[in-house]
Amino acid sequence: TGLYELLTVSSPFSKMIKAETDIHALKAQSVKDGMKPLRVAGALKIIEGVTTADEVLKVTAGLN
Image 1 (cartoon, rainbow, N blue to C red):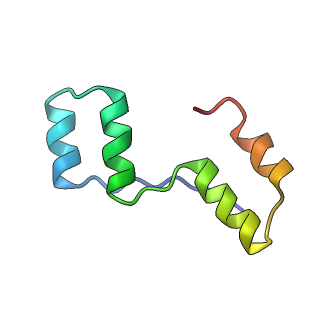
Image 2: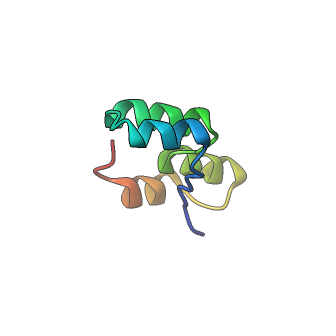
């Protein structure tokens, strides 16, 4: 089972990149645009029963 973090660059996100917006605002916009962070994707896989919390924590260690 894989965990993926897929970002589709929306028009607002693109404008923020061009304006050299800080990383925290970019992360917030990406989530607003529908991106699921890796740990959230992992939590969904745990709920689906296809992986364990230990596995998710192992592959996402060190992520903010």
